[in-house]
Length: 190
Image 1: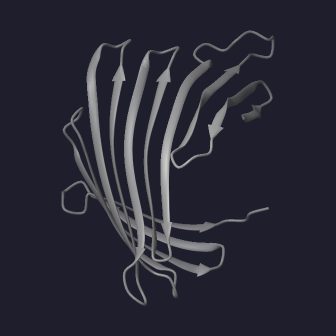
Image 2: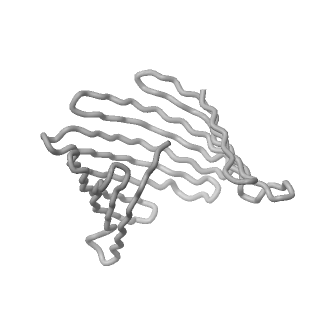
Image 3: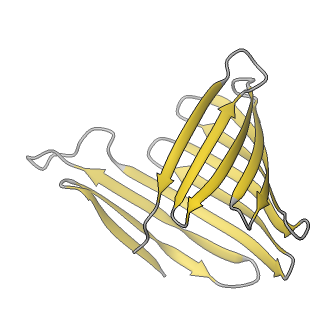
């Protein structure tokens, strides 16, 4: 059983309810419900959420790697949109000093209210990791038929301390509209 209520702010709430079936193909389904109100108790316009979702995944683990295949579907019952996503990811030991990760996904989205045609977005990413130093090089691409855009990203990540990472990336490095970013992230788990 999935039951996860949350108070997002003084007057906004969200709850995830559903179920999970452990099996070779792990299946879960449920709903995300949310709302927000004014100080007087009236609902804020467009603050309601009623999303139905479902996922099915299969994970295979071996001493040399891990792979995961899955499909997910979501339907926005209030706004009439929906999405179906198929994904596949794999990580494996490439050599004594390098690990590799790859991921692919294709997503079909539909908006019944605005009567737009379905849009298809495909993405693919590859990451090369040196586990002893915490250095990772990554590259990713994406294409969407809705906008006709082709995007690409290259990046590097370096673990400085156990909870401190430095990331740098450049989006669309082979076009005139490239954009870069540098981030220093510190994470604490408790």
